[in-house]
Image (cartoon, rainbow, N blue to C red; front, side):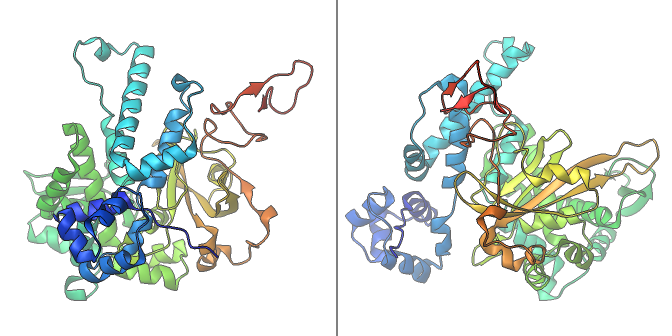
Length: 466
């Protein structure tokens, strides 16, 4: 069988600039000529086996990162952007998009930011947003979108924060109860933790040195919020340094990202990387057993599974998503080739939407995307009570999945016949860019295809896709 050639010029260039080496010095350490290195960095030649070995031997580089990265995400995001009607029929071939993502990722991101700015301007105009009327007002991605993309393009794994949280939870390699450790830190800081009838998940009064938590919340929520506050109080330098590197456009985005990083620390301290990875493998990724073992919620466990992307110690590449009852994606992350739509909801054929109909149960699905990749998908509803009869109940559904080649490592897939092609349901990413012609749940036509309409015949759809 022919071996697929590895073109990773952008990643190779990123490694060299990160080491602050010139092309000449880098080529010398890799044992190749300067012209050869230049050709590899510009994707005119594939990365040779000798260079891969030299990267591992000379620099301790995790060579699996050469074949991963942002390329698939960028291709998916560009396809969705180019499906916008503003581009009409000017659809570049998929090969061109892949070439741009591999050879010029900075240009691809600039294009996505330009399209996002156009979309926001268009939406503001449509809603008569008065801010658009202010002359000179810059159009930037919303703070929420900017933070979402910050985590998205880092595989939802922040190494420095993850390791700091692991050191906190396992000082000198000895495991401690994270909740107890957080309590001791707060006590040492002379901060009193009290339970009240409040609805807010966490209120910290710096003047009174008091942390208030809702009495109605579950123990997992209490532990998580205590660890979040510990992160803000004891890891501020680390969080601020990480934010400095991110270079957010607005103070609002930076502030939201700091909450995200503190949440990341809390989850990583509650479920320390090495311990959690080992337990996940031992339990065959049984979410309920893992939740019980680490004192976490099922949603927290599912989210943590999607972050296990530490170089040299990676877990199964999972996707994780949370949707509300309207189908809007409120959390999304994917370490797999499956990428979620940046705008709109998820495919209605995906089992995550059915989870609302079967509360308390895990739903399983074998699914295939239009690119032919097959996945094992797990879904379950999550209800968050307000703690009182009159308080609203927030309902979500979470989805977790991986490529079907990993299914034998999941307890949920034990009795499924993954060898039978007919067992896989066709799902897509977004109707706007989905290539399936005969989908009975299609909401809008694909913008990359021409339509034909026969007034004398009607199928499930009122048009046919050429």
